[in-house]
Image (cartoon, rainbow, N blue to C red; front, top):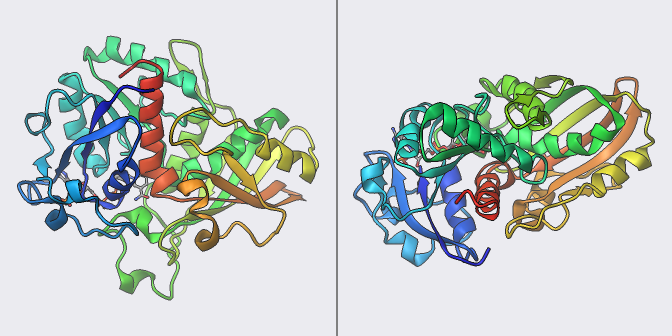
Length: 346
Ligand code: NAP
C-alpha cells in the first residue's frame, strides 16, 4: 500500500470526525484533501468550526483548512475515498449523492448497515464480505461503493464472539456500560449523566442484536446469510468519557475450559493493514480488567481487551472493552478504507 490516496471527511467537526483527523495525521497512505460539515460550519476555518476535544493538538494544516458544505460540489473530484461521520438521518440523504458521483464511501453512520447489498465489515473478521460491492453496483447502478462499519458497542464484542465461534455460538446475552462520547457532542448533557447511569440508548440494543449476526454471517458471492446465534442486548450510558465496557454471556454448544476460551481469544488472527493492532484481542488474567481508563488506548485505541472469563450456568461469561470513537468509529472506518485500498476497490 505505497501510493498516496486522497481522502475527505464528511462530518469532520464532530466527535468521530475529530478522531479521523487525529488518526489521519501522518498516515502512510492517506492524504487529507477535504473536510465537510453542516452549512453552519461551512466557509469557516476548521479551528473555528470544531470544538476540538481530542487529546492531541489540531494538526496546523488542518486548523487553517476551510470547511466545505457536505455536497459533491464542495469535494474535489480527485478525492478517491470519503470517510463519513454524519448523523444517520443526514447520511441517508447525502451519501447517495456522493456514490452516484462515483466516490467510494467508508461510513460510520447506521443507515444501510443492514441493507442486503451493503457490506458491513471488520477487516479482521469478515474481509470477504467486501465483494458484496459487486452486487451493490449492479443493483444501485452507481460507480461508487458504500462500505459500513458496525456500531461502536457491536464492534466491542464481535471480535470476541468470532473467536468463540469455533465452540458453536448458540446465544449471547450482553449488558453494556457505554461512554458519553458515544452519543456525540450534543448527545448527553452533564445534568443527565453526572452521578448517574441511563439504562436506555435509543436503537442501540437492536443494532447489537442484528449487526453482530451480519458480521459473523456467511457470504456466498450473492448474499449474506446471518449467523444463527440468538443475541439479546441491554445498553446503558455511564459517566466515562471514552471506552465501552461490556459484560457478555455466551452460550456455546461445546464446553471449553476458561483456558481454552482465553487461548482462542489471544490467538484470533489479526490483519496486515497500517492501522491494525498487532494483537486484536488482549486477554487479562486479572479479573478486575479491562477498565475504560486503563485499557481503552491499548495499541493506539485499536485493540479489543477482554478479561474476567468464567463458566456460569448461562454459558461462558467475560468482559470486553474497546475505545468507542477509535476502534468503535473512526479507526474502524479507517481500517475499512485501508482494506478497500488493499483489495483494489480504491
Ligand atoms: P457529532 O459529534 O454530532 O458530529 C456530527 C457531524 O456531522 C458534525 O461534523 C456536524 O457538523 C455534521 N452535521 C450535522 N448535521 C449536518 C447536516 N445537516 N449536514 C452536514 N453535516 C452535518 O456526531 P458523532 O458522534 O461524531 O457521530 C457521527 C456518526 O458516527 C453518527 O452517525 C453516529 O451514530 C456514528 N457513530 C458514532 C460513534 C461514537 O462513538 N461517537 C460510534 C460509532 C458510530 P457541525 O459541527 O457543523 O454541526
